[in-house]
Image 1 (cartoon, rainbow, N blue to C red):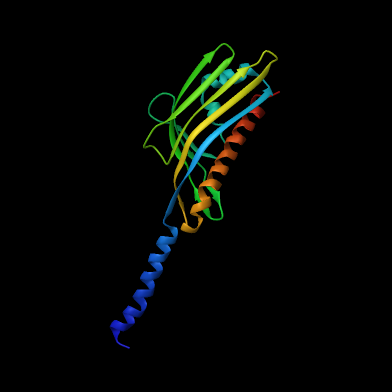
Image 2 (image 1 turned 180 degrees about the vertical axis):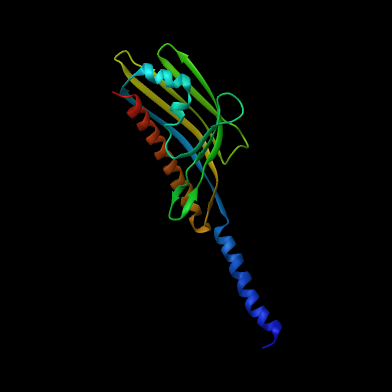
Length: 185
């Protein structure tokens, strides 16, 4: 066997493997987010209101946040979530949101909008905490947007967005449980 044949014998399979491996892992998907949840609980509305005004204590109740830090302007926060996924596919969501906090009588309203170009997630939302006449606190949370640029093997393209969305939604469920645990009686 000549030296050129030996190189071709090795090089062709190596290039074919590298190309097929790249194709198999080159998929990128999105996970659309559309969440609407409500929970009602007995709790300490004054303590909730104090932390609402301080802002950061409520933000820190979101589970699986790896990094939470102020981002430039007042009431603007950068989030990096811990890796989420299953079956060897993981996604680290990063986003920056500008918050607005309003109070009206016994209602606290927090809205946030995504700052474009600051991560791989586009999330906007609203949380309304209302004190009922019977002393119950009602929490209404809505969130829309998407988790973007989820890197997955091509074979997982069909289900990766759905799995990632479900994991993110379970984080939101846990956030609401954390609020109830922290401010509930």
